[in-house]
Image (tube, rainbow, N blue to C red; front, side, top):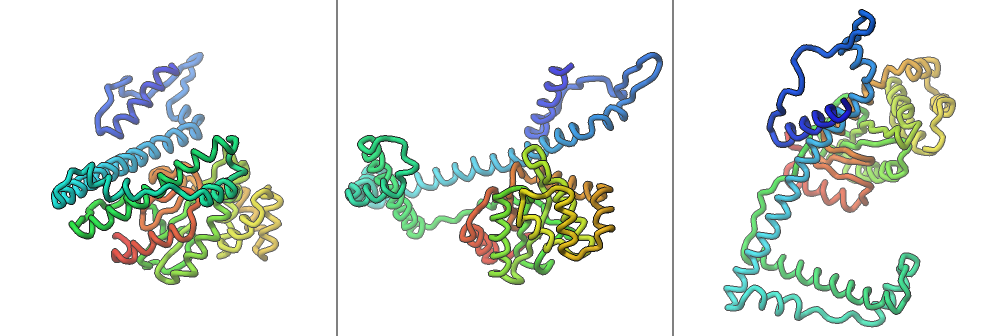
Amino acid sequence: MQSFRKAGRVCALIAVLAGTGCPPSREAEPMQVTVGGEVITEEQARSESRQELELLELELLRARASYALGEHRILEEAFERMAEEKLLAVEAAAQGVTPLELVETEILGKVRAPAEEEVEAFYEANRSRISLPREEAVPQIRNYLGRLQEDSLKKEFLAGLQQAHGVVRQVAPVRFEVDAPKRPSIGPAGAPVSLVAFSDFQCSYCRAYSRTLRRLVDHYGDSVRLVFRQYPLPGIHPDAQRAAEASLCAADQGRFWEMHDLLFEDPGKLGEGEVLNRAEQLGLDVPAFRLCLSSGSRAALVREDMRAGAGAGVEGTPTLFVNGRHIDGNRPFEEIAAIVEEELAAGGRRR
């Protein structure tokens, strides 16, 4: 039975990704098992295995998003390789040389051996991370610095060719629908740039990233709207689910962002008592907060966020979407700001 289920699951994934169908794996009527004349229904089995089925659904949603992102990345890389080859061929023809001769003259021939002082400075700056003896590391450092110089020369040369010969890119980024008007947010609903963050209150990277996101809000003002969505990872963060629900219970009393900051203040202390202490610290209606938390009434909202995130390819936290563009990991302010600037220059949010 286990191998049968696995085969069906793989087929279902392939069917979704490739747009094909699976052969029927069983009859259409509901499954059931009878024990001593008493029937165990498929509905009961689904209720019993609800958590496992939800995890399976998230896996399927992530697979679909991963396919879309992977397909786009492969095509984008192919376009860049082909455009580079075309540019070199056009310029080589204009100069009456071969593309290889052009590369040798304009790029490889301009690479200079790094100075010994530069090699030594690199070694000293990275000594703690270099496991090789110095005599083995230095030649590798020299080669590495040479490759960096070559890459820089190539990038500069190709940029000039693009300007000279005209390159027009019509390769729009993949965008996912992840905005949620009823989730906690900062900034006007009609802001031209939407920042949707999927986060986990026990994630140290999310804690650091939250400061970057606030900095973006402060910098761009009404040009951006920051939306917070929950993506707790209980497999590695046992208190993350409770913290997620606690933040939404605080949101019921109009204090989400204050609770957000307190939860991130000490991610290692998110037990039930410690979360209640934070509610008291904020001056919330603690009995109402306690009832909200103990009832699990906000768990459904967390599940909705998890499904939305999985459907957009979220596999870990933090993950940010800038007008639907998927950006994973704890990225620096400057990198996100550059993408925000791109979106603003392009006319803002895509409807």
